[in-house]
Length: 167
Image 1 (cartoon, rainbow, N blue to C red):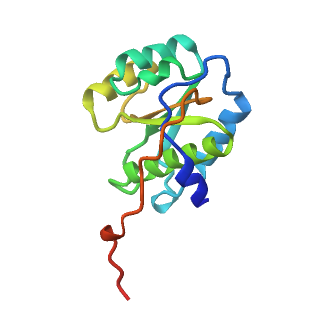
Image 2: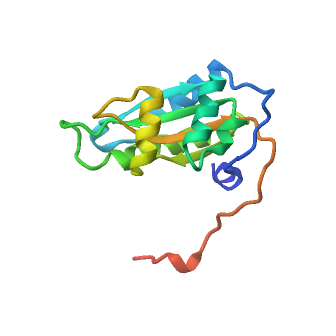
């Protein structure tokens, strides 16, 4: 698993002739829904997008999701922060679901890029309007998905100085 974590990259350019299959999308969504959540509240829904026009529109309206113009799919993570769920934990829960999608995509040979939406009001409003997401639901993240056309160098690394052990 550490190898997958070390090798996974944020992909910003995809091969447009290699579509993500429905089966691959199902696998990614299953991985997302297996993520841990506070009190098993599962405060999420997902929108799987393969429509070219919608992907292009996401690239236009989200300032950091330009890669959707070449991605062949995207998953929008939608947060459900309603009453009756542990208050305030949906960002961690939806973050865990998002990370599961990224790791499963790597396992499937796909590239991804996590583009934050929440808590930026302008991004939340434009993505919600485009996809018909109504309150109290909140668009949390856009994940661009496809076959990588370019694989960047590793950027993350271990920093021993940022760790304190308590024995």
